[in-house]
Length: 603
Ligand code: ADP
Image (tube, rainbow, N blue to C red; front, side, top):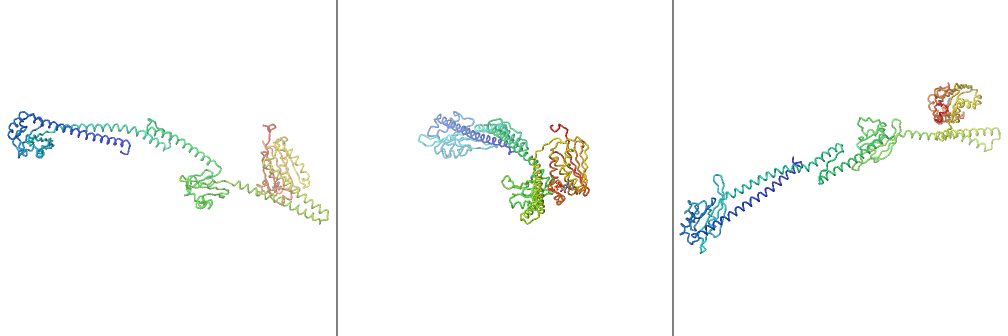
């Protein structure tokens, strides 16, 4: 209970009021008592003086002889109050009481009466007025009495006797008691009022604090739409203003952090690279979908980072990475894909290394391209090396001048010429291919009938075909087939395929060519009954420099680029090519070109 500010407030107020009232009460009653007693002392002194002044007998030198007069004067003339008692004590050896307001004590020695304080009597006989207060208890009641002994001197300065006056202090202490009682009641009332006022005052302070605490607790649950009412401009009001300001700032900052987090998460989720982070103890903090897919991570299972990483490559184990300060790059192979893994440490809130972040890049394609590039350079070098070597050796022989025979010189020059042509063809094909691949060819697309182009190309081969005694059957059903194609490009396509059919079909072979329209496509089939292509090679014949039989192709003047060029030209015109082949039975190439209706090309 006393942990709450409210009760502490009330307790402190209570103690303060209690302390203040106690001090005031103590001081007040003390002062009251003193004033009352002083007044009684004065009144007693005055009474004694008036008795003394009114009696000649008391003023005489000889109280022993005047004793009777004195007693009479006391009994008849002296006014004695209800609370008072008067004793006239003569200064004899036994200090006899010669007159008193209590007749029973007259003639007794002062030392015999318990109503008279003996010590006070002896003290007064030294010549000074003395006084004291005594307490007398009877029947359980304590009664306080004030005693005053007044020495009376004769003309010779000898103490004749003592006027002894007592005064009951009941009334005085009754007043003091009443006052104390009254103050106690006032104190209780003040304490009661203090509790009530303290309650309200404490509430006015703790209320806003409680409000702030309640709102802060709401905020800790993530609800930042909190504000407290500013009810004053004092410290509590300032606290409320500050709280509202802090809430707003916190809300802004948290929303910024959320935005950043969401941006980061979206970036992580949609980035092409895999990102995965681990604590130094190997527990996984985060993995984006790409990383999960690459590393085949089941979201529901707990991941042992150390096991996962060392499973990919021992070099990636956190223990090994520690040696390199968790920074570096490694190339790994996972499920036939090549990945480049970059890793770096990230720091925690106390600026120590908190974990490691791994960025996994799929470089399989890049690697393939790199390999293709290397292969291409090797192929080109290889293709050029043979004709260059041949030309060089024949030229050297000719230059030596040892050959007399004109025919031999002629045949040498023919070889040099053939090899130069081969190089020229190769370079020409390469240039064409690279132009197409780098989109540098300006296709002049026009509406043409592929069957008509086919007829023109076939004519160019008529001589070779007749030399090889091959039979060509050309069949074209539809007269009107329109395709949007670059004429030179289409000629090149047919030329390469027909030239292959002629080349890879033995003498007296048969070549069948069909050109027709099927739904929205123009189909051109070029079928031969030549050597055919086995299944293992069929998928690769469109690759650059790919030749099923190197020697045979070279003998036939092939560069290994013909079908690669065909494929690129067809792709540039949204056309496709299919191939069916059976070894030793023949090959069929089917070219499929989308047809157009006249006028559509400008749509
Ligand atoms: P090449 O200049 O060697 O003919 P191509 O790219 O035109 O190069 O053809 C690639 C390879 O495909 C050829 O080397 C050959 O082995 C094979 N090929 C192409 N057409 C035929 C065909 N009609 N019959 C058999 N093999 C063929």
